[in-house]
Length: 105
Length: 123
Image 1 (cartoon, chains in turn blue, brown):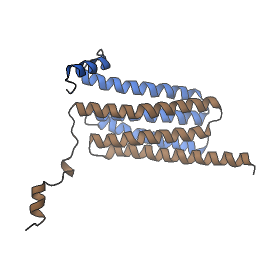
Image 2: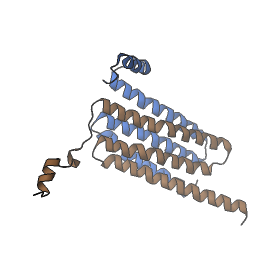
Image 3: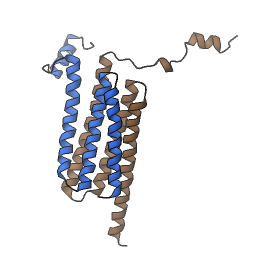
Image 4: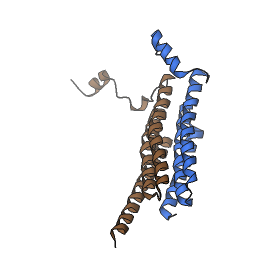
């Protein structure tokens, strides 16, 4: 489109590369999840800018889908590494614990 | 120069300003995530800048939108990011806190009050 949009896309790519360094180097699981989530947000932004550069609005739909999947994936990873299972219903679990008076693990 | 042209130029200038500011925030967040010493400080860098930088870049693209479908879809992405990004950050912080992660305070801990009293020369 114009040179400014292209430079924005270039800067977003640089930010994604820096975030990848933390993703691979992160000492704990939560650093990695945080970096992956942030990388996903930057991917959404890059897709939006890319849609403006090539002037095709289909990429915005992909960005919307990617934002949804990114959020769900983050929550799923956190849930799996806390309960070691994806079968537990989160709402029922915390409700049961609150009723038993032992909400704090 | 007609009023329409002036409006168009103003919209483009606002769009460039918003997108540049958003890129500055996003780059600052990425550098902060790499440079800060502790998980919680890194989370602060990523969580705060991601929301604001993303919203600013989406706002800049909204000002450039050519038709109303593009405008609506961009607004939808912006609303979604505005809702999910802080929620995900909060979930990560909650999970780390529940897993027993402590903030790394050793480098920044103030001296004990007794030691501070004895060294600051009370007598």
